Length: 117
Image (cartoon, rainbow, N blue to C red; front, side, top):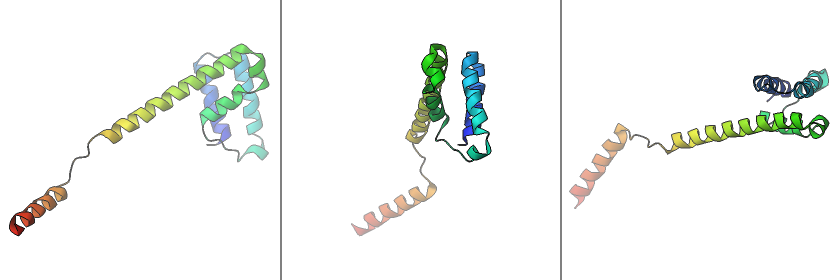
């Protein structure tokens, strides 16, 4: 994931959560840095990784409200990821219907065993 895109999405989510102005300013600072030509190709594993990076900034360490905004966002992302994983597991657990070929092959095997006896 591109860092700039991830930070912009994080900022949008903070706005939706009515985050502190200082939290938005912290993200804006990193967006400004990520906009520089030298950081154009910077990438991150996920938005969650970016949020955790923001939680370790000086602003987060000195301002409890900023830290809490990022913690709230982290929790939302973790819950969303857990729900998505549960849905995928549920879909994988559904029985797969057998094809016509399966039943045709089964019928042929049964004929062979009956005629071979």
